[in-house]
Length: 239
Image (cartoon, rainbow, N blue to C red):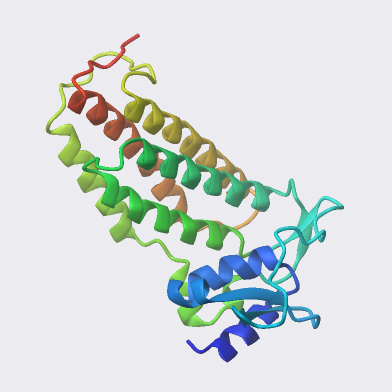
């Protein structure tokens, strides 16, 4: 994708830098992002500015949300406590919690899997931030889809981890080794994200795959927490 084409697509999303940033991360290579800044074009959109340019880089704050509103992908302005904003915000928090869990055990056997999960969650967040996906081009819609094969990958990881664990006969408290506690925390945040997505689905269409994925992900995080305790030589803390 060329920079010029990306600029046109980013402008079409409206003047909000946050959505443009999400879109850029979904569409542009990482090396292009590292080599450039986003800059307000002054014409209702954002464009890339090469580092070293005389134009100023983008500030973190834009002041466009000071009145308690934000823009969805496509430019629609909504309150920041809108169900859709809440849903993709909770998914973002779940993603951050998984990042923290990965940092707690960077050499853990599930690190690669969780890295892929973080990419899936970014796509899910983008999908939840897009109220009219039909307005996107086919390749853009594809970027926001988390298909059934990703759910199967989670299920296979759950089955593989459970084979090495003692059968579960008691409720497990979210405790134990630091890596396990971090995974338990990510699990509870994921459950909250799932509830937000389900709540949104009662009012507006939400892809079934998103709900299934979030449901299966919390199960995976639970099993990985138990596995982390087992690898640390710590028994599950039961209730």
